[in-house]
Image 1 (cartoon, chains in turn purple, brown):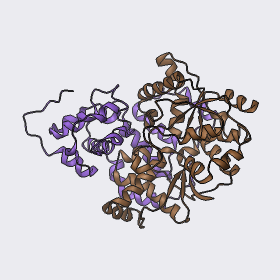
Image 2 (tube, rainbow over the protein chains, first blue to last red):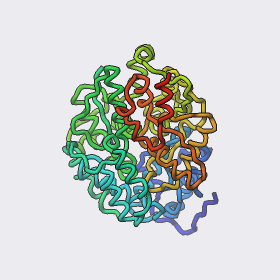
Image 3 (cartoon, chains in turn purple, orange):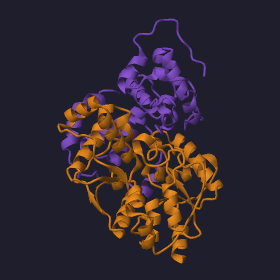
Image 4 (cartoon, rainbow over the protein chains, first blue to last red):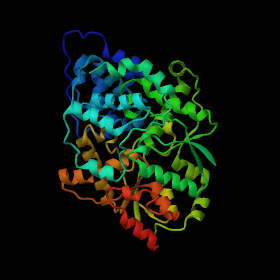
Length: 189
Length: 289
């Protein structure tokens, strides 16, 4: 992939932010491309894992958030397993997602940040996930009401989806965790 | 043998069949699984995509609950298993994270609770000999592709489950049950996992490739050890048929359901009626043998 670098000086340094968040030294990358060759989704994405690293090394700035891979990476960790420099690419992608949500950029198909918020909201509320609540919150936000409607009655019939949330969780720790984390899980849109 | 059991959220909804079959198999083999009282969600992918502290604090809370029982933790869900192992690893190796998590939870946790996957318990703690002696039925004549997916095997130095490129722990169980294990290349490919609701198109692509390879390798069914792999590969076969025109009709069962059948447990008790693609051919074959 061709990486375009703007002549204007980029504000701040994304590579440093990502390194700070993930604790991973991205400058160690040799561009051997083992990550890209083994990546589960390279057949489907325009941008490959090694491009993400190279773009940060070349300081392309926020343009990186246009990369489709950021929200299409499945966190399968094949890249990390095979990296000769032990770069935890999955955590690098996580750090980029955190920054993308903070900056409210990188809007992509599927609206995964909304799914993540819907999921974590049920965990905050009940201590465990509640599928129907999570799906409702997500679908209302994406207007994808009709997707998978054929699956719902079948799953209910088979007892593969719970109608009511579980109330058996001890929320002692989750209350503390979400008390501290409420800024990150709620504020971003 | 006694363990603190962490079922994970899917055990109460999409993977009730997994929960049922694990409990039945454990009972038959005298493995005492004591459910951790008040367990909470591990945070899964939404947590690690949102905040690192959150993604470690959520599993650490459960590890702390397990530690108070004095028992090792047993998990079946591959995603929960992975998050527990990552939390232990981070807390053990990174003092800053250890302190941060202690502040978040209000209690100190040192990362020392041992975490096992239920399959590891069967192979390492029960052992081949005892397992074989307990079987009353056999998978003789059944070609099974064992599928491990991502989260059990990667990253190897964190999960320590098996070889990350060619794991064989489930294949050994299948051979022990008298089934024919398929040597195939897609054991550790990704099914699309957490994209089940958000990017079904990715799940369709990735799962199609796995199912296609299993079929080409001659598999009559696939054995899995992860609730997300099970539901993606099983329930999405109809979507794959619509999008790709390929009707696999390949039963996707939990390895514990196969073990249950060989232990003489009824398919109902193992939750096998919950599979979308009917596992009836497997059940009939085992009954006949």
